[in-house]
Length: 367
Ligand SMILES: Cc1ncc(COP(=O)(O)O)c(C=O)c1O
Image 1: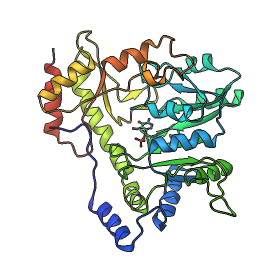
Image 2: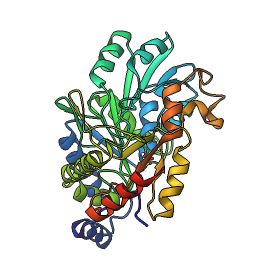
Image 3: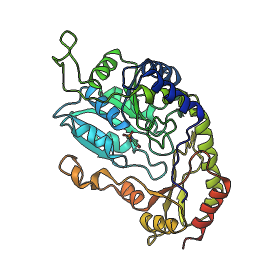
Image 4: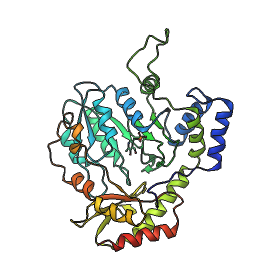
């Protein structure tokens, strides 16, 4: 089988974790945690970074650190990972969902404007799959209305929007280091901010909000969402390769595009969209044939030994979320369409040209 993603672990990553083990730095109490956070801040251009156990944890801590609480509304994409909605409902706040665009799959900015009320406390801006959101336009809107921004950059670590990295535009940015990301620590995540108060709150929340005088007299309701030193040691090693990974992904995306763009059965995002560059974190395709939905195509590819994955399923259609989302009964024609017909194909660093050509041949044969 050709997997949809495959982490690239090099000898330096293995040596780093070995060193961690040999020195007994196996929990979160170790020197590589601090080093990784410092190097990450320098790389991304943010004052502070807080490592955590995964990207979902980063979102949960982030939303609480922004002061979101019961009665607040938080605008989130309808086409996204469930972790965005979960972070909001865990604080007993209300998610308000916004449809995406057909031409980049990110949140539609006009729809964001329509959803703002006097209860809107924050927005989660998530860069989805390929292109960065036009985050500067969202920042402008939010500044005027006093709305806080959590920028979920789990999928676009190391990718720039205009002259700054994704994840550094909001009041805080979050990242995931899951096995399919540009940088992996197995599981893991990071929160970045320039705000000292938010930083200190995140540090406390990830570590059970231990008391400062009596450690076991806790300051707030926190979590144990700490990263281990072993993970941080791989992170430090992987951080050096992020730019190479992105370059390779873009190369793979461009190759697929050159071979698939003329196939009338599929829509694929081009390498450029106006002035923006496609990062191709995943190579997504949307079927344009009514009888060929994503599940049907995924089954056909599997028969040829190719693993593909369906796109996110809209938040408004998630059964467990219906009682929480304010506007789940609204119409979301774009997210409904792409989640039914969208899927992504193998595009990991190190995939061979003959594998790419085989996948392309199989896709072009689908009728
Ligand atoms: C946009 C986005 N946010 C958050 C997450 C959650 O990250 P994790 O799997 O590390 O919890 C993901 C996971 O892929 C994601 O794609």
